[in-house]
Image 1 (cartoon, rainbow, N blue to C red):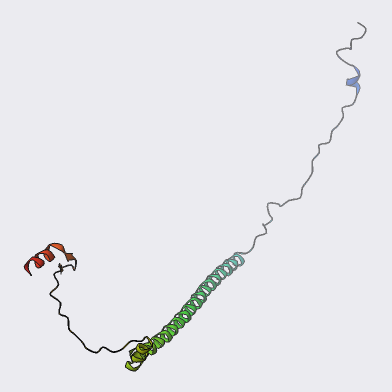
Image 2: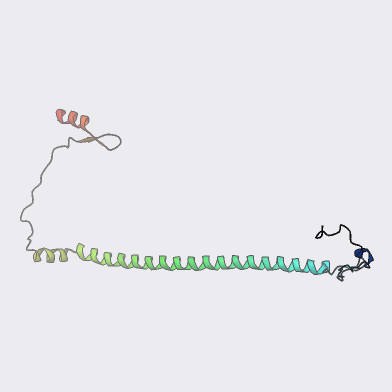
Length: 153
């Protein structure tokens, strides 16, 4: 057995054991006696008060913008209604002038002569018999009542 290695080596015992140094890193940190860096409670309270005041001012700004918008909308609507009222008054005045012109007897004669119309030479009266069409209480035409009135008259 020429190529086999011995199960135990004598030289390994003769060697001095190697000393390994552990790899430890020291990280400086807070000790038990050191206080944490925190803000004082008065500073936190003042920050909260400041935030509340900002929110209140923002809400007041939104309300003011809403009121200003409503005011502008109302003013525009009022102006539009005023314009419509003036247009209606102008149209009413124009119609009043036109109506007075058309109802004037001299203007009626002038317009009739332009249309080659003449005044009537004699007048006659036509008398119509009583109407046989009758309506009920609701104002609707009633066929049965109308037929009864026609047979009586």
